[in-house]
Length: 258
Length: 324
Image (cartoon, rainbow over all chains, first blue to last red; front, side, top):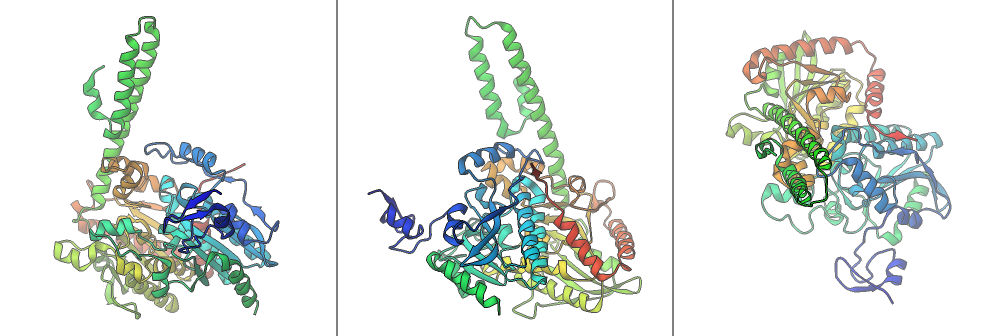
């Protein structure tokens, strides 16, 4: 039997059990990264997903070059992840209820938000308004995509404006914070939701622990920015295990129907 | 090859060039290669060195602007408020947990009409800088600005903001108090108010901390101010993994007023006195005053709903992507 080592407690887990447990360690409840496709599969009703905005692609409009060009980085990432971008969007059903669903993927350039992520959030918001269905976004991101310069910062404004229009229509907006969610995404569409749910242990902050360490010249406390610390500080509504997320979302969708 | 030429190219490219050079030298030692190929290779290499030299010159020019934008003798938010507003009343506190002095907010008169002013203030000498926390705001500051924006919206006063911050304050307490949601809420509120918002970048426009005050019907930028998703230092640390990339990062980020006008992120550039605002601070304040007065006149008769939808349209159209 093939085994995987838990990133947190280092115990060996049988692969099959790990997958059945939705990539959560059965010994320490560490929630490991899962990609957007897996997330979709464990969240939405089977075969209910209709993808939107598939034809929208990033390109290197600034000719941004650090140690390699943004264009090359994009190509490499696409090959490595078989994803087109750091988010997939579409309409799906959760326990039979229609939702406008967005799922970010940390595997694509650290889930960073550039023009395409911004535009896809806008398309998803418009879809939610057009169909009058709740908006649910699974967040994970290192922040704005530096390779798009100031335009990536503007995506914070763009996504907030798009989602403001959803909220004005009194359509419920729920975000699920997964590990990690920080920077430009946490300071824009992730935190203006009606309900904010976090997965256990998820890092959820604006400035990450590395930046904090540079400022205060010592290590921040081990629970810095964790979902649990955010819960204590009143920044999230609830912490929900991955295995219960689908039920929790389904229940909230019913409650919002009034 | 004249090795002296290499002094003018960015340090982080030196390794690549030296690598190509030594490869070329090695190839030359192989007897059956004809000279023509070397000429081509040498010409390519020379061209590469020339283009890297241009990158270095460009980076130096941009870095000069970064330094100007941070110059402590430039007029600061306080100077603009004192020079532009009459009967200004400073307002304090977020009515929740505290007062953040890095953001100045209040009401004053311009041409006899009440206008709300909000801006980051960095301070000059070390005592002032400590007092204003170097213009790095905490959630209490963003929430104070939300309170004043709400006030302006309620009574129909236009809002003028002055942006000058290295970025939000990266501290444990600020994070514990909800830095991310405070910034998000500020951005959200600026899309909701039905009064004109005029935004002026007067120095450093650092990341989310800047954006939290920067959703304007019109966004103007002083010639030598900067506006960026991350500081060049921060960008170099992440992408180049080395502080030697700082000036290159400044160039790549396209953070100058001219770049941003080209990208349509800002609406206009306010020109500075020759050599920069620090050379003639009082004249700079007068120039900005003329701009603010004109901008308010342009927007004051536009209905609130239109102002609001105008901001949404403007920011929601930002982004570059291909559709195929």
